[in-house]
Image (cartoon, rainbow, N blue to C red; front, top):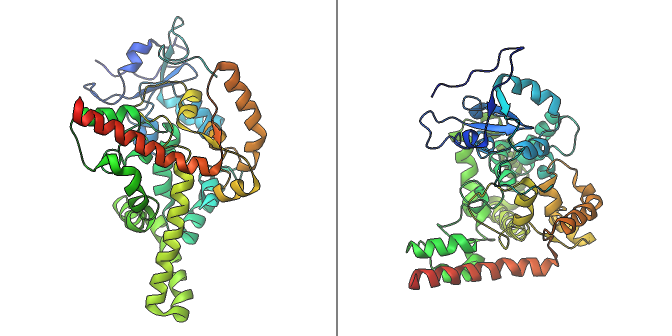
Length: 378
């Protein structure tokens, strides 16, 4: 099949059906084409996706799908972005085609996180610059690594093989009802998943940052040649060593570093997973943006302590629906989101903090039991 050319000026645009677009996912098609739709316009990103500023994977996750809502959610200066999109335009949806795929429903450390989401300054470049300083110099991690993982998470939360945050399935944990049963029926056992709610306390909160992130961030920066990010990271370690080595000596310095990473790891895992692990986890079913975010996220009740402790990520639903919104505005939009959910019969979950923590363990126990039953009897 010949690759479509961008339409010449003045000619009538080519018309496409959802069936044609749905074949261009970058998988299986002989030419590995990737198309997506934004505001009924069809764009060929086959050559562009690797140069996408937000990362190749995050845009590829929408190949063969409508990307209108994520496009609006992720980009601050849409007019500027559209200028660069013109060269990718190959046509539009045929008039008889709906504006979204027939399968979709018709429904409408926290500081670096803010900068990474472009929610502090009005100009993207200032957010990116200060993000590199905060996560690199103050925390010792590469901004490019955070962007690579986190943008994918927001684009397809809790979607296996698209959201990196659930990549712990199946190597360490069996996550979600559907995936756990599937794993058991295939007789796969990488870990004793029926005990995962117990070993989570060993390889989960205490281990993620000091035993995994700590080495992987360096591997990521070097492997992807992110030399600017690596330089920012090194300034953190140089500053840390020069500050504490004269006071504590080598052993004391290493002990302090491990303690800081241990506290950070526990804090990070409990706060970030309380909103997601207990929620729906499955393969990407290509449902609408609103439903995708709501089925994968839940809130924790608002209070001064919860706001501070979670960096306002207790408003996880609002954060996922409006990823560039400054976090101090989440409480303002929350009642509007809640009323919209009630109008369309979509569940809006909010719970106490300790209940949210407990639900992580309970959901791991439940999915582990589902895996064991399928493993033994199906």
